[in-house]
Image 1 (cartoon, one colour):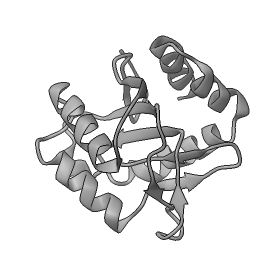
Image 2 (cartoon, helix red, strand yellow):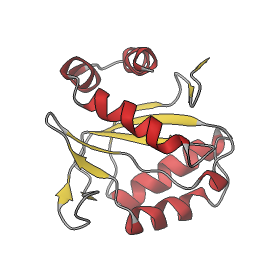
Image 3 (cartoon, helix red, strand yellow):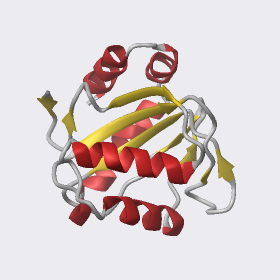
Image 4 (cartoon, helix red, strand yellow):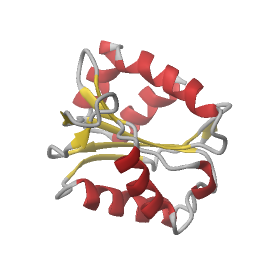
Length: 155
Protein backbone atom coordinates (compact mmCIF):
# COMPACT_ATOMS: atom_id res chain seq x y z
CA UNK A 1 0.00 0.00 0.00
CA UNK A 2 1.29 3.45 -0.79
CA UNK A 3 -0.09 6.75 0.38
CA UNK A 4 -0.85 10.09 -1.14
CA UNK A 5 -1.64 13.04 1.07
CA UNK A 6 -5.37 12.45 0.74
CA UNK A 7 -6.07 8.84 -0.09
CA UNK A 8 -4.83 5.35 0.64
CA UNK A 9 -4.33 3.13 -2.36
CA UNK A 10 -4.55 -0.61 -2.15
CA UNK A 11 -4.27 -3.22 -4.88
CA UNK A 12 -7.28 -4.92 -3.36
CA UNK A 13 -9.53 -1.90 -4.00
CA UNK A 14 -9.99 -2.65 -7.69
CA UNK A 15 -12.98 -4.60 -9.00
CA UNK A 16 -13.13 -5.35 -12.70
CA UNK A 17 -16.01 -6.67 -14.77
CA UNK A 18 -18.41 -7.81 -12.08
CA UNK A 19 -22.13 -7.76 -12.75
CA UNK A 20 -24.49 -5.65 -10.63
CA UNK A 21 -28.23 -5.75 -11.21
CA UNK A 22 -28.63 -2.04 -10.51
CA UNK A 23 -27.21 0.87 -8.53
CA UNK A 24 -28.67 -0.42 -5.27
CA UNK A 25 -26.93 -3.78 -5.61
CA UNK A 26 -23.71 -2.05 -6.61
CA UNK A 27 -23.83 0.17 -3.51
CA UNK A 28 -24.76 -2.76 -1.27
CA UNK A 29 -21.95 -5.02 -2.49
CA UNK A 30 -19.30 -2.32 -2.54
CA UNK A 31 -20.32 -1.04 0.91
CA UNK A 32 -20.07 -4.56 2.35
CA UNK A 33 -16.69 -5.04 0.65
CA UNK A 34 -15.37 -1.75 2.05
CA UNK A 35 -16.74 -2.59 5.48
CA UNK A 36 -14.96 -5.98 5.43
CA UNK A 37 -11.75 -4.08 4.73
CA UNK A 38 -12.51 -1.85 7.74
CA UNK A 39 -12.54 1.30 5.63
CA UNK A 40 -16.12 2.35 6.36
CA UNK A 41 -18.63 2.17 9.19
CA UNK A 42 -21.74 -0.03 9.08
CA UNK A 43 -23.93 3.01 8.27
CA UNK A 44 -21.92 3.82 5.13
CA UNK A 45 -24.32 2.01 2.79
CA UNK A 46 -27.38 4.01 3.86
CA UNK A 47 -25.38 7.24 3.81
CA UNK A 48 -24.06 6.47 0.32
CA UNK A 49 -27.57 5.81 -1.04
CA UNK A 50 -29.01 8.93 0.57
CA UNK A 51 -26.22 11.18 -0.68
CA UNK A 52 -26.52 9.83 -4.22
CA UNK A 53 -30.24 10.70 -4.27
CA UNK A 54 -29.59 14.23 -2.97
CA UNK A 55 -26.37 14.88 -4.90
CA UNK A 56 -26.01 12.58 -7.94
CA UNK A 57 -22.45 11.75 -8.96
CA UNK A 58 -22.73 10.71 -12.60
CA UNK A 59 -20.58 12.70 -15.03
CA UNK A 60 -20.38 12.87 -18.79
CA UNK A 61 -16.73 13.38 -19.73
CA UNK A 62 -15.35 13.90 -23.20
CA UNK A 63 -14.21 10.26 -23.31
CA UNK A 64 -16.52 8.09 -21.19
CA UNK A 65 -19.18 8.45 -18.53
CA UNK A 66 -17.97 8.09 -14.94
CA UNK A 67 -19.46 8.26 -11.46
CA UNK A 68 -17.87 9.26 -8.15
CA UNK A 69 -20.15 8.09 -5.34
CA UNK A 70 -19.17 9.00 -1.81
CA UNK A 71 -20.58 9.59 1.66
CA UNK A 72 -19.79 12.20 4.27
CA UNK A 73 -16.50 11.72 6.17
CA UNK A 74 -18.31 10.65 9.36
CA UNK A 75 -19.02 7.32 7.62
CA UNK A 76 -15.38 6.67 6.67
CA UNK A 77 -12.80 5.02 8.95
CA UNK A 78 -9.74 5.34 6.66
CA UNK A 79 -9.27 7.34 3.46
CA UNK A 80 -9.53 5.33 0.24
CA UNK A 81 -10.40 5.29 -3.41
CA UNK A 82 -12.02 2.13 -4.77
CA UNK A 83 -12.07 1.56 -8.52
CA UNK A 84 -15.02 -0.35 -9.98
CA UNK A 85 -15.48 -1.17 -13.64
CA UNK A 86 -18.85 -2.92 -13.90
CA UNK A 87 -19.46 -5.60 -16.51
CA UNK A 88 -22.84 -4.06 -17.33
CA UNK A 89 -24.45 -0.64 -17.55
CA UNK A 90 -25.63 0.86 -14.29
CA UNK A 91 -27.72 4.00 -14.41
CA UNK A 92 -26.73 7.05 -12.39
CA UNK A 93 -28.26 10.50 -12.47
CA UNK A 94 -26.09 13.28 -13.84
CA UNK A 95 -24.36 15.49 -11.31
CA UNK A 96 -25.23 18.77 -13.02
CA UNK A 97 -28.86 18.20 -13.90
CA UNK A 98 -29.98 15.52 -11.43
CA UNK A 99 -32.26 14.37 -14.27
CA UNK A 100 -30.22 13.07 -17.20
CA UNK A 101 -29.06 9.48 -17.11
CA UNK A 102 -25.39 8.58 -17.06
CA UNK A 103 -24.05 5.07 -17.69
CA UNK A 104 -20.56 5.11 -16.22
CA UNK A 105 -17.90 2.77 -17.47
CA UNK A 106 -15.75 3.67 -14.46
CA UNK A 107 -17.03 4.19 -10.91
CA UNK A 108 -14.70 5.56 -8.27
CA UNK A 109 -15.90 5.27 -4.69
CA UNK A 110 -14.22 7.96 -2.61
CA UNK A 111 -13.66 7.76 1.11
CA UNK A 112 -12.42 11.09 2.41
CA UNK A 113 -11.74 11.95 6.03
CA UNK A 114 -12.28 15.70 5.64
CA UNK A 115 -14.92 17.48 3.57
CA UNK A 116 -12.42 20.14 2.53
CA UNK A 117 -10.37 17.45 0.71
CA UNK A 118 -13.23 16.81 -1.70
CA UNK A 119 -12.54 19.71 -4.06
CA UNK A 120 -8.85 18.90 -4.41
CA UNK A 121 -9.53 15.23 -5.10
CA UNK A 122 -12.31 15.99 -7.57
CA UNK A 123 -10.05 18.41 -9.45
CA UNK A 124 -7.40 15.68 -9.80
CA UNK A 125 -10.03 13.21 -10.95
CA UNK A 126 -11.39 15.60 -13.57
CA UNK A 127 -7.89 15.87 -15.06
CA UNK A 128 -7.63 12.09 -15.12
CA UNK A 129 -11.01 11.73 -16.79
CA UNK A 130 -9.80 13.90 -19.66
CA UNK A 131 -6.65 11.79 -20.12
CA UNK A 132 -7.18 9.37 -22.97
CA UNK A 133 -4.19 7.28 -21.84
CA UNK A 134 -5.57 6.90 -18.32
CA UNK A 135 -9.15 6.21 -19.35
CA UNK A 136 -8.24 3.78 -22.13
CA UNK A 137 -5.78 2.00 -19.86
CA UNK A 138 -8.43 1.57 -17.17
CA UNK A 139 -11.05 0.36 -19.63
CA UNK A 140 -8.85 -2.00 -21.63
CA UNK A 141 -6.83 -3.61 -18.87
CA UNK A 142 -7.94 -7.02 -17.73
CA UNK A 143 -5.67 -7.04 -14.69
CA UNK A 144 -6.41 -5.40 -11.34
CA UNK A 145 -2.70 -4.71 -10.90
CA UNK A 146 -2.44 -2.62 -14.07
CA UNK A 147 -5.45 -0.52 -13.12
CA UNK A 148 -3.99 -0.05 -9.63
CA UNK A 149 -0.68 1.11 -11.13
CA UNK A 150 -2.46 3.61 -13.39
CA UNK A 151 -4.42 4.97 -10.46
CA UNK A 152 -1.45 5.11 -8.11
CA UNK A 153 0.78 6.88 -10.63
CA UNK A 154 -1.95 9.44 -11.34
CA UNK A 155 -1.88 10.67 -7.74
